[in-house]
Length: 248
Picture 1 (cartoon, rainbow, N blue to C red):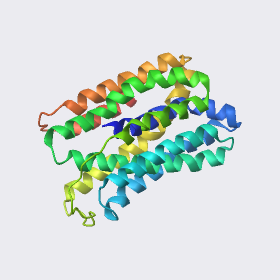
Picture 2: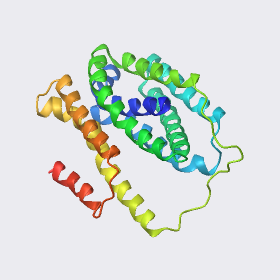
Picture 3: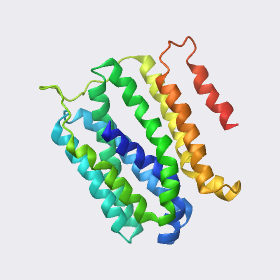
Picture 4: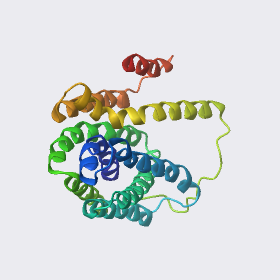
């Protein structure tokens, strides 16, 4: 749970980083958005491929958390935008490993799955106003908070089944492939919107950073309700259709 908090905070901070990063490193907001591209890209690659190479373990868990702590401190220290991208790549890798480990552990217990699926929205609910406030102190302050947020997880000792092997088999379920494709499209479409939403809110709509953070919090609150919704759905696709209505 602590590891998921650190991972979610990293993504929650991104929309509030674009402006400060663009100003501090004197780059355009589009180029500043490369931070999100690097973090999410490495996150996805690691999350997909690492489970096929290694097994869940305490050492892997600590290495991933250590990468997030170190990358946060180095990101706060560096004065080079290109080095910042490198450090955020390591952060994305750490978050990818931690997310896999959290779900690998949670899938052994039915109630744990609901808890892990809820921790993301809960963290984002609190994280958005937090980073809207911290962003006023600059880029260094945001990355320092991200580094500190990963530290508590280093003092925990997650237990993983002994003798577990890497998952190298691919699912033969066609429905799983359709679902993965749909999730990929939804994530691809929504990722940039999420990142640049803060820019649109402040520059197009004239909203303050605080008001923008409340919009993100409301989004996370709705996500929390969805994560805790356990009833079986006859037509689950209607929830995806509701996203299109919201976008319109």
